[in-house]
Structures are given as C-alpha cells and as structure tokens.
Length: 209
Image 1 (cartoon, helix red, strand yellow):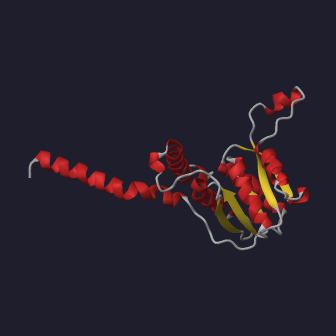
Image 2 (cartoon, rainbow, N blue to C red; image 1 turned 60 degrees about the vertical axis):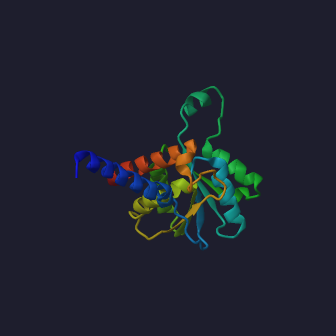
C-alpha cells in the first residue's frame, strides 16, 4: 500500500472517529440523578435565571426546605461600597429570583465568601458544613453542561469532612444548552470545550490543593 493510500486511510479513520464521538462528547458532561428528598438545595452561581428557577421548582416539589447559595466574587465590590453603591452579586440575584418564585425568605441562605470558581464554592460550602452538621444530603443545581464537573468537584472536596454527605446532581431543565447538536451552536460548542478544559485543570491541579 502506498504512503498516499495510508494517509487517506488515516484521515478517513479520524473522520469516522469524529463522526462517532463528537455528538457524544457533550453527553458525558451531563449528570442528572434521580432525586430523593435532601437536607438542602445548593444553587451554583452562573446562569442565575436557569439555575434558580430549577431550584425553586424543586423546593415547591418538596425535595428540600432550604436553598443555599455561595457568595461569588464581584470585582470592585469594595470600591463601590466606598461610594455608597451596593451592587447585588449573583447570590443576591438568585435570592431575589427565588423570592419572586414564592420561596420564603427564611428558607434562603447566602453563604458568605468570595468564590471565583466551582472549586471555591465547594470549599466554602465544606467550611460551612463543619458547623451545619445536620446537613447530610444535598442537591446540586446547575446548568446541564456543568453538572458532571460540579459533582466531581463537590464529591472530592466534601470527602474531607468527618462525615459522609450524599450528593445529588440536578441539571436545570431551563438552560439553552443543546447537547445533541452542540457543535452546530456557537455557544454550546464554547461551553463543551471550556468544560473539558476546566475538568482537565481540576483533575491535573485543583484536586490536589
């Protein structure tokens, strides 16, 4: 067989592999458990509307009586405060949405912190759970493309606690991620590529912190 023929076969094999695997790349990122009642629902920051609407729905369906949100980093927060300007962060925005969706104020809790990443959110939550020993099961609510990495990170970080915490992953039913044709949509393609990069970064670096 000539070199040219071998080269053609090689590229043909690559194309076949891409055709087979590319449509399925996004399916690994989505992790949606069958839920049971839990002690609290955790709303991950980012895509506030989609994630909070899902969490409020789960609250009204009776899956939990408490919704938690970790305060995320807001660049320039202190500078604005010095000027008397209070700009709501994502946690405050999420709480506002939940209140409008008739979740009682006393059932919403913002955990203070300066989370810049999902890993930060998990660490801040872990510190909070040291005091909240009654919380032994949690539903993690986030966008569908973010569920697998969220579960892996939280499972790793919370494993350092002195008790077992059961985690359930819930993908929002409202986000606009398109897993079946993700490579045909610019935003969905960007989400998939970034998620795999972030997952690789966690496995190679963050998990050892």
